[in-house]
Length: 401
Image 1 (cartoon, rainbow, N blue to C red):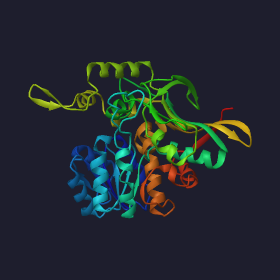
Image 2 (image 1 turned 90 degrees about the vertical axis):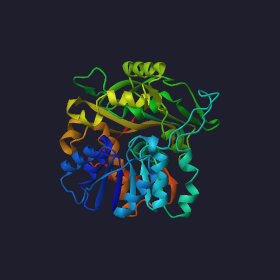
Image 3 (image 1 turned 90 degrees about the horizontal axis):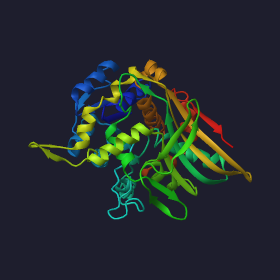
Image 4 (image 1 turned 30 degrees about the vertical axis):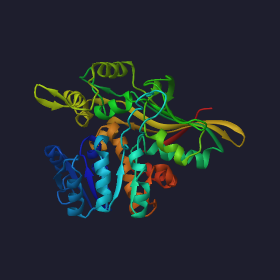
């Protein structure tokens, strides 16, 4: 398999590092706007023929298409902030190759009732083009990171094997990771974090369909394996848009453990207008406030040696099995020290990356087959879960009732 990897930040580096161990991965083109960063990753991987470096401006669709054709790739893997998703998604279609991403095309809040009704939903742009992809015989597998991605696979597994009737599927994410030497340093892309945390969260209910609520709503304390109790709140996320398309449940939610400090910072950024992604004029220079915030914070890709702790991602499911109430949590815990030792990447980006490489594996070897625009729930979950331990990310199932 030949892959054009668009974006070689923290997650992109982790994808390449995990894929390096797999001999069926013939070539990964490391393409990034920051050429120095791509060269740095290539030097660590140590095989220039297998990991060539290219400059790419992800906002320029034609340059992505040119690289895909130059290297004759089978797949374009989108590993940049989702503001570039439309161009990369369309480039793969035009180049006639498969496509994967870890976050879908962006939403736009309802102009009049943002906390009650969805406007443009996550992934709407992609799903509107599903028939064209299907007619061309191409697969666009969207949302194949950890959340979304692994969590969606767990939802499908719960439906197929653990429940006869599902009342609620809730993605729950928490961590106890600390970063030494920084009062505030996100361990994931701040651009993406601002987007998903300050947008109105989406909830799905069988009788209502998709609707929205206020950011940070419905706080609850969730007891995470190997971590303990963490307060989690509603956050906009792809699983709520993906799971109901293939899994039958009465309610679907996503809640994330942000912490009071993080929520306070995000609220302040919003109050000051520093969360905006539209460019403004600053002394003759056009710049997006959110890009300024990102530039002022440390790069998550270089924080691994300062991070300590674990992160837990998973899918909580409540319903009935054989007439009895049941409640389970399917999860994966990544330890930062272990991830740094094995792949040289911090836990949050490594945990995000492994699902993508497993998906490459399953598509490459014909285990997952399909055309059109599909989420992870569209495929049988067992082959994915069977490979998780081999890839260094074993899953667990905790009975909670």
